[in-house]
Image (cartoon, rainbow, N blue to C red):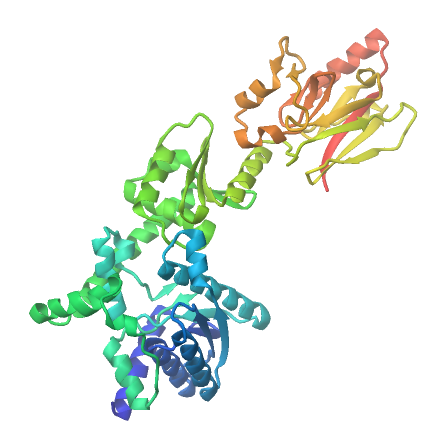
Length: 511
């Protein structure tokens, strides 16, 4: 390759990347395996920087998966020398892919990809934090990779997203070489006299991609010529279609997405009404926002989610998803999360409904101040971020009701104490009669009727005495008043009957 031809390679990458905004950053981290593609990517980016076409700092990250004894270590040494010769800062990470694949019941190839992309994100984030610059991670996928991926995904039954994959950019990942063929990259390296590692397994038909690359594509080329040419045209056409559909899907997703204490969820009624294509994209968008990836989220998982959304579960419903993750449905809420994540979400749903949660057994005796005691008593509520406060109120003007405070005539506390608890800490039968109501209801039945997530019901806080719920924050109390009308009536009745106008204020406040 002549000097002008190598310059043409740089020009082609620069033009392609500029139109896609790939170099709009301060640092580019090259995912450097040591193979010809990533080595060419490093040299091309260095060439653009040396020509002052880009102003990004260049770093490199090498992941040693230790799947091929000796060979992997040799590749790591080659990469170290390459970066030293080109004055590029290199970070090398070592992974035990076999152990990770065994523990997560995935293939070694998938394990390597998961670990590699997690490493890219963590290193990029660390660089952003230390430098204050925007960081992108450059991956060496090229035209032939795109053609192979398109056909592999087509025969897997993929939709548009699978056919238009890999994309020039996805999050912080960029792919500047999608405008070049593999042969252009190897010719470029040969013209520079640059050595690189060759993975011998890529020359066999072991694995699906190698079968397409080394067996099926050569057969196709005998009758139709280079298959990457028409596939590239198809890729561009489908990419335009996908861009339009994605914009519409984003609007549908935004219209039906909300946050519960910072946790992204979808509104079930709105998602149900969407066309299947839009519903699919909304569900996948939620998965990606929740976990930051779409790895191994397949059609079977999507159909399971549709069944959960379109069904009518009587309470909470959970579905197993890849990597130990869960799909979660409660009422009109649909979400994804880890096992701990959906448990936390259930707590947040209950709190959004106005209830207070102590995430552990609670049976706390609370002492009520004496009538002459003007100080406020404080008690930390275990397994929570709340404090319970009690205080004597003698001035009726100080009475102000809200969801987290309760005013009760002092004679209710004849023994000078009550209990703050939850069903997980007090498992004896409890009942509640709401102020103004003639009948009582068993607590478990009441929590069910209130549609509190079942997994959280044992954690809902209440104040009780002698088996009777005196106050259930988020629902009401058994004696006292709830608003200005009942307050006026209560004060008038007490004055007419000569009863004390001394009240106890019990309040729950977040620390």
